[in-house]
Image (cartoon, rainbow, N blue to C red; front, side, top):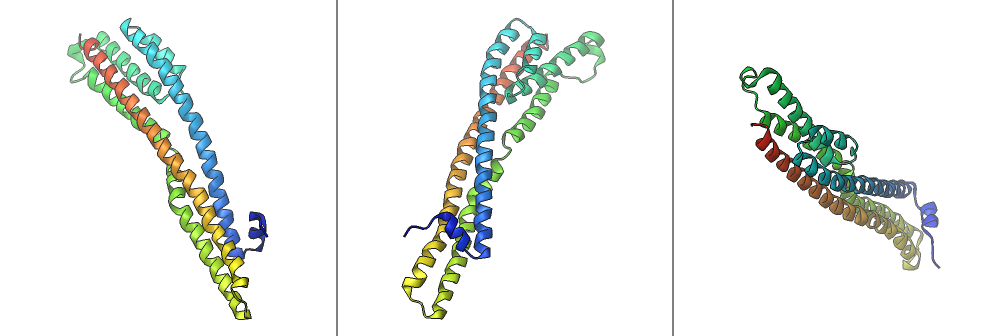
Length: 227
């Protein structure tokens, strides 16, 4: 006779109910993080592609203000936020040079200023992109062990039935029910590991994009900022 997960939960001892409940919470969190990160990365990729195409045209025409305005309309993209910080640093640096003159700004280096601004924002955006991934990694690592712990408790309870003179026909179903905890732990861990590896790859791809665009912008500053 087949027994449902709900029936197993109801018959399980309190320790196993707590463990199964904890694994259900972990599975809900995995689903939440997976959906939330998918939406974040999808919007980021779409806006990054759109903005990079516009940025090259703006820089070719030396339209820095327009590039900044466009970046403010693409705030879902980490690439746009990084480039916006560089554009603002470049604009402020050029205004300082024009206002005070190169002889009055001491050791000010506009290229170094822009580069530091880019790196600052890039590190912050990388941290934002990795939000939730630590939780996925943790769940992928501990869920099988949590499930195994539930199985151990269940098997201990099953063998306690031998005190009443029961045989394998008595403890067999109890052991089978105990193994459900391990199955649930694997059911939670496997998707968490898949999502973690997939999203880590997405983040690394966006980090490369930020680095590439930052490098191209530094090249632009080297050409224009020291003239």
